[in-house]
Length: 230
Ligand SMILES: Nc1ncnc2c1ncn2[C@@H]1O[C@H](COP(=O)(O)OP(=O)(O)OP(=O)(O)O)[C@@H](O)[C@H]1O
Ligand SMILES: [Mg+2]
Image (cartoon, rainbow, N blue to C red; front, side, top):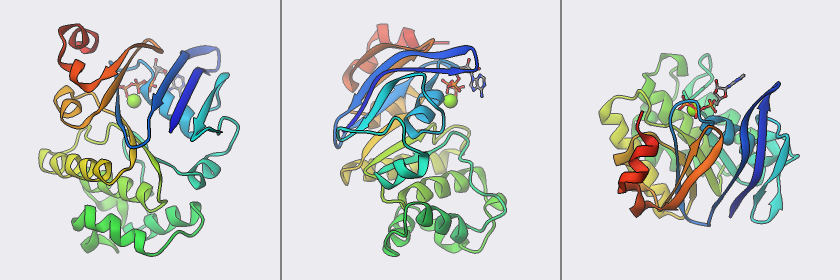
């Protein structure tokens, strides 16, 4: 479903991705891993169109997205939860979700209810400004905001980073349910045990290149652990 081919991305003159290729088959959950600073977030931003690419291609179901704007990619079915969640702090929970629905082109009203089924705690916080939510609640809102655009493919950048354990469990369960419901997911996750529980496949980046990829079962291998050890 998602195919990334030979992506090269730079910040000014500093090149960060050196020809990254990966695929996420329909319905799969692919875990993107690697140490701090190897280019995981840069790759997700390039897939989403938040960052321009120097060369290479991004395709969703065979359709080339590489030159499209972010909102056009959203309309074609890409959803994105950025690292550090980045909700609109001055807007209420309800307004955050409304803005996302409009970006995606006025999706069904029912999608908001479906997102609340996944994170029931948000239902009671509709009128609360996002900036006053806990970090974990903001992360749940950021995921809900991506879901109301009704993505077919979801990009999640370290959704459990710095989040209290009880909410990490809720987020893990939500990801599991979304995957079971057929959503294709590319998940950036540094916590190996979580990746082992959730992923079908994994890709490891190091210094802007894919150094290993395979079925999730291989994540337990000593050679894989070495690539992730700090
Ligand atoms: N806006 C920017 N301008 C210049 N360099 C940047 C910028 N953002 C990231 N970088 C650099 O690009 C490289 C990759 O960063 P990136 O954020 O993609 O890594 P990451 O794998 O997501 O790291 P982390 O695990 O810490 O989130 C790093 O060397 C980083 O310093
Ligand atoms: Mg990152």
